[in-house]
Image (cartoon, rainbow, N blue to C red; front, side, top):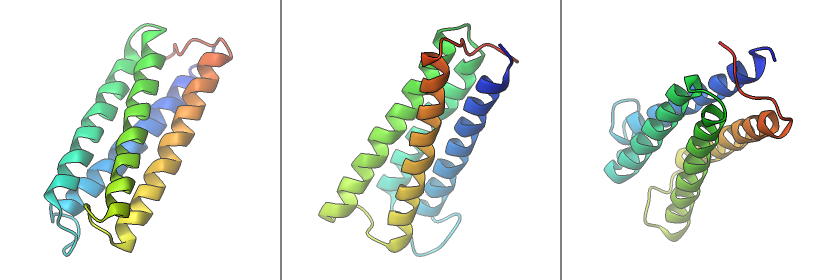
Length: 129
């Protein structure tokens, strides 16, 4: 198999890490002012670390590379849904920016998980450079 599927999965993971680090930076007051919420920033930092670990483990041998990528993205989806629930019940920040970022997170995480799962379900190992 060519290395295209694993490069695509890695590309999604990199994008996901960047989105979560940007959101965390925003909530720690580093990227934008007016959106400080330390609990949200901490949660987004943890998710970014898990996604980064999943990215690093894509260099592990199959099937662990695909499992690590899928697990990291599934954790990110769960964490993002928790964030949306906190927004809905009024515990977390409730700005339009927060809702939009969470929507973007869900779209990118779900898309990445679908790409990862399709590669695994088509019996392609996620080997490659």
